[in-house]
Amino acid sequence: MTVVVTRDVAGRFRGFLASCMLEIAPGVYTAPKMNRAVRERVWSVLEEWFAELGGGSIVMTWLEPLAPGGQQIAVLGSTPYELYECNDVFLARKRDLRSED
Image: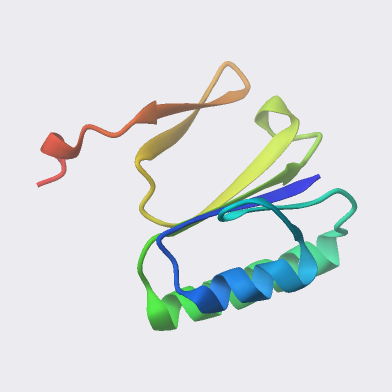
């Protein structure tokens, strides 16, 4: 299962993702059987557009048996959470925005 979550991105991203994945909630896209080649191509397009347009954030996660917790995560932009690995599991904690001056 591949999942992409977008936050505050241009409509172009949402249209593209909706063309190849199911939008199950605003800005949340899933694809139960997306193979590696397709996933990498989708991510490549998102990276290219994000470099041009910027703004918001995009998080992609997918099944990766050898990764911590059995899933891999890729991020574009700044998310309100910090992702980190602890005891072979990815955890998320809210960023302390006061310390990012």
